[in-house]
Length: 90
Image (tube, rainbow, N blue to C red):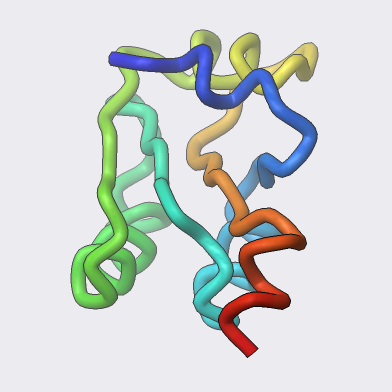
């Protein structure tokens, strides 16, 4: 497990932000907490896997939240495509 990947400014945390960037095809990796509510994360997981985005499981929401430098748990988090890469793709 490589939670250190989330120690960057181009991360997104939480269901709403992750959904938004996932729909825009702007995520390169997704992290999902094992103890997150299945109803919340099952659609996100399916969409990410359908788009070929790697999904990594994290032991708990608390660990995922800490890795994202927030003071509470997080059910999902993702790593965005960086600005330079987006401009090259266009």
